[in-house]
Structure formats: C-alpha cells, structure tokens
Length: 84
Image (cartoon, rainbow, N blue to C red):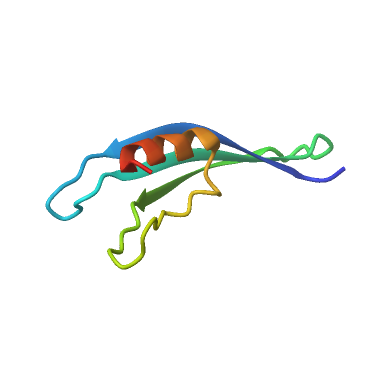
C-alpha cells in the first residue's frame, strides 16, 4: 500500500492592518499527516504555518493573492478580509 498524505485546517488568524502593513494579513495553521496502514512507524504528523498578505499593484487591476493551494474556508476568509 502507498503512503497517503492528508491535510487539515486547524486555524485561520487575521491580523489587522498596521503602520508596517497597510492591509490585513492572514495566517493559516495546517496539520499534515502521512500514513500507511501497513507501516507501524506511521503516521507522521507535522504542523505548518503560512502567512499571506494581499497582493497590491496600482498598475495591475484585479490583482489577487494566489490562494489556490489553501483550503476553501481559508480562501473564503482571505477574500472577505481583502474584499475580493
């Protein structure tokens, strides 16, 4: 059997705009798990954190931060926070 990776969204954190960052910043915390039912040493579980800010360029209309690799709920929250 093959090793299977699953990812679970644990938390979405929205940090408000500050003097250094004129737009809110969104951080997600994910839990990744690699498992094979036939391997006694698995599963391996790791947490990871990703932070993204809103992409902005006045010369590029409708520019959006790429969020395709985030879970749908995190994408929805980021788009609401950044008003996409």
